[in-house]
Length: 566
Image (cartoon, rainbow, N blue to C red; front, side, top):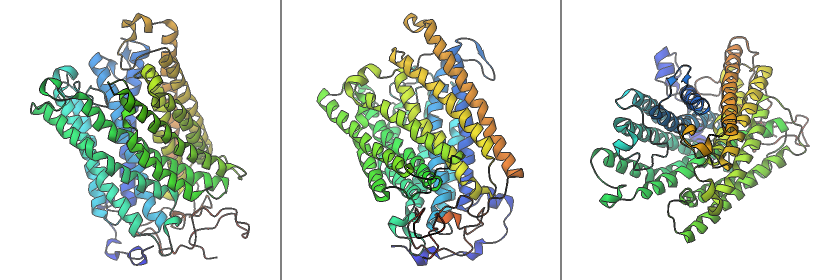
């Protein structure tokens, strides 16, 4: 039931002119906090992308000096790989997809003026920013940044002489812990706001899919992160207080960390997937001018996916000595989780079928998300089955699969969301031609990076090796050709990101004015001015229907805003 009393409440004392620091650095406005998360996440993506550039250059041209870095030493290589993975998942995908889009969209799409707890919202970002600074600081301490892989498996992570980064590994753990605290605070706000501040008339099934998916993702994060926080404390004690939770010589077990890490780690895939797939849902319905097919089924599927995600973690341990009978159980549960995800994809295809499709930039990103993620999903089946995973484990096949899963989520999903909501965020339209150049300049090289890595993985190339020249079976000419192809493709893809930033600055300076509803969409954020002021709406809206009433036979217009009476 919508809570009209809460939704219509404005705090007029906040509606006054504020200085730059108060408005942009110390703000409680959910939109400014969105921009803070997004800018920080994009900055971290540039750092994580630079790390990928440096270690891929080492793999393609071992021992040569890398421009802007120098010679990549074995220690550098381990630190670069470790922190690339950590940054792209925890400091890019999560802050941009959940925190930034959640902050911007939830109050606007449910028709209220701000988050329920705006000061907690601000504190969430400040702790997140602190976590990013702590992580970056690890590169400047004695021994350098943590180099024990982003999964932090003991004993590499628990014993200083193994990772050679005694201080860096503890700083890494502290940074991750701070980041988790930030997202716990943010999740409380998202769930509470979505459940309590909906506009008058907005029933639960009138809430847009993206809002539901961010709420479900927040619940998943809260339910899964506890064991990893406990494990992180135990690991910190092993590193600094001489305990032996993960040391078999002291009665501990290193595999325990794997259980704790992946009990969080696999639901984490769906924590970032759900907002991305929700962004695609919003875009597809608008640019196909069709009602989202099976709205309630999509919601139930997302909930089922979340529940199943807690039953699959041990498929990461098929080669860790797991009892084969338990391996069968986790094989079945892992393969089962592909059913709801496949169902979601088919729902989107059914939405597109027969639609009046416009292939502008946001729609291209949304369609690419489905296509590329499908490859990640299908290749994941080989790793979820214990028999085939024993061969593929820790090869470049895993790495390619992982990137076909996370790149669509973290990068394609982000570009889809930014290009779609940019007119609302800034009041200006992006240039569609520049947008399409950026799109093709990203998607084509992406496939040239990771398809070769599938081939190398099938040939048995193990990951996390600094120099393949030391392994004659992996130093064949054709293998180096593929490594060079992947590296050159990465350079091309990085170069095309310049087009995106050019488009951003050109649109801000000379972009066409967007108006309130340039896409002729139904959801409530398009009722607000572009960009929305403090308090979002000139008059808080009332909702009369669901969010996806497009091409209704009884209407001349092919859209029907949620706030427009019949």
